[in-house]
Amino acid sequence: MTGGQRFRIWDIHSHLHSVPGGTPEQRMETLVRFADRVGIERMILSQGYSADLHPTPEQLREENDRVMRAVRAFPGRAYGSVYLSPMYPEFSLREFDRCVRDGPMIGVGELEADKRCNAPEMDAIVERAIAMQAPILQHTWLKRGGNEPGESTPGDLVELAGRHPNATFLCGHTGGDWERGIRIIRRSKNILAGMAGFDPTSGVVEMAVRELGPERVVYGSDVGGRSFASQVAKVLGADIPDSAKELVLGGNLRRLFAPILRVKGYLA
Image 1 (cartoon, rainbow, N blue to C red):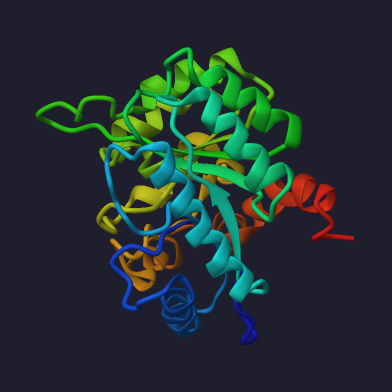
Image 2 (cartoon, rainbow, N blue to C red):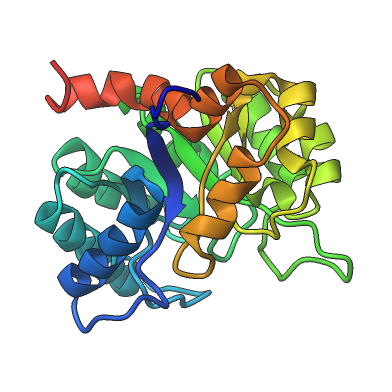
């Protein structure tokens, strides 16, 4: 972008874990200070900070409470996204209602706990999200030695997205092995590629934009496990037009979240 203007950057993939601070509010204050250095306008915050791979319903609720505390302390800088698990489908529906329908949150995920996302228990969660027009961020990975038990792949997300064509999914990390991940999700028009949380290798954003179109590629950082700066650099340093960078860095997220933001009264 020229003329001293800057991109409006929204971060789809941020957490409070590994961030200094004794309370959610203090950790969020730290994130905002770091985000200011690279011009990030908004964060979509999820999961709190326990990083427990097998959370109980009580832990899920506690982490969602932490996110809501952080978001309420900085309402102009972050939106919340609810942490759920298909291991507990009935609880997850109640928690969605508490946090999204009746609370301040606007999305679902990052989901990554205990069951792969193609499990039938995900269907009711997705349908509840569709009813509120809430996008869903799903963790995916492709590990050379095999994923952890219950850890989703981009292929699992393609299967889920095929069952729910009216839902909007964001493929968290695009599987990490991004060349494979981009190709796997290419035909699934309701899946966007998330650029968060893997090394800022040259060519990743270029390939995603070329194969999927700029409307299906979204910037994220995965803080506090990664830095804002290294992840923003993937997009700012990409050999793509400024018009594509505008979409990837924030335009796509503002479009995706506009319906639920209007429903909840955050947009006129």
